[in-house]
Image (tube, rainbow, N blue to C red):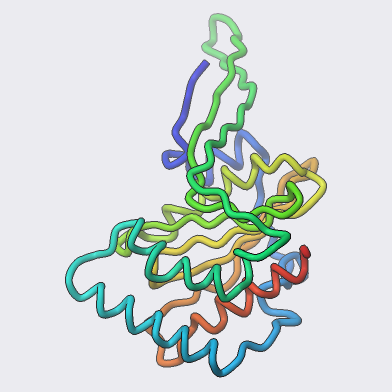
Length: 217
């Protein structure tokens, strides 16, 4: 038995061992841009303050993971309604998935098991359905490194008949993902949003979070 830490998993590994493929169909993941609810002027003012707070704190040093959660993530979850009834928040949830693999070393064929282990930063659940996995990284961390790890957690969804959604973020960049775990697991990515554009793209992040809350409530 071989144990692999989730943060060391690559997209190539997931494709080879779990048949995970990326969907290029626009209609596969419309929840991040279609039927998006409006947010109020008061919510926009609050998000403007969140952006200002983040950039002010960032001037001193790159933010660590816990600071990203406190300054950016917690206000987003509050405004999106994920602290209310029907949802509940779990943090640092342990997850593991396993896969039987065949090793052909030319002399003989061996069967062994690889187990991937990791911990989800924040998990928003509703009636045992995984609504949103949020992987928050330090501000200097590239989202590209977090995506394979988040997909690993999404593959561990215990409700394979339902889609699972994910937000990966590092405080200044945000990207949503959707995975459907069927005979061949498929996933898709949203556009990437950033705080460094003139318009506060936290509006779009909150819009999408609210939409996901409505879709699965």
